[in-house]
Image 1 (spheres, one colour):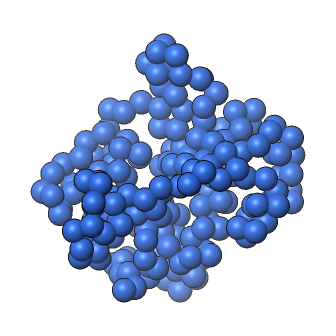
Image 2 (cartoon, helix red, strand yellow; image 1 turned 135 degrees about the horizontal axis):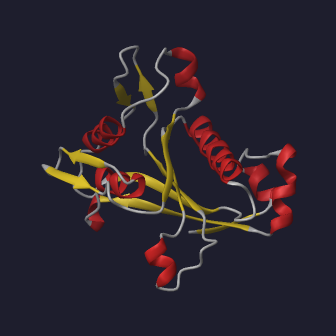
Length: 193
C-alpha cells in the first residue's frame, strides 16, 4: 500500500501538526505500509534487529540476529502508547522482549507478526526535527491503535551513496505490534487476543 501524505490525509489519520505546517512547503511526504508475516518467511525479531542495527536473540527460531555493524542508523526508539505510560511507571521496554513477546502471541504458522510504515522525511530539516516528526507520527499511531512502535531513523550509508543512492533519502521505519499492548508495573508486556 502506498500513501501520499498531504495535510488533509494526515488530519484524517489524527496526525496534524499545526506548528509544523512549514514542513509541507518542502513537498509531499511519501509513506508505504507492509506486513511482516510468517507466511513470507519473516520474523518480527529479525526485522527489528535489522532496522535498529542491534543484536537480538530470536527465541522462536533459536537464532541470534546481529546487525550491530550496520551503517546508516540515526536512532532507534521504542514508543509506547500514552495509555500505557499513564497507567504504569514503565517508560520504555526492551526491544528483544517486545518482539519476542509479539512473536509468541501469534500461534498460526502464517501469522502477521508486525506491521511496518516506511516514511520518507524531508532532508531539508535538521536531524532533531526529523526525529521529532517521526516520533510524533509514531506516537499518534500508538495512541490510535493501542500498539507499541519501534521507530528507527535511517540515512543512506557511505557505501550506499557510493553505489548511487540518493544522500537525501532520510526515512523512518516504524514497526508496530499487530495487537493492542499492555504493561504491568514490572514491565511485562501482554497482548490482547
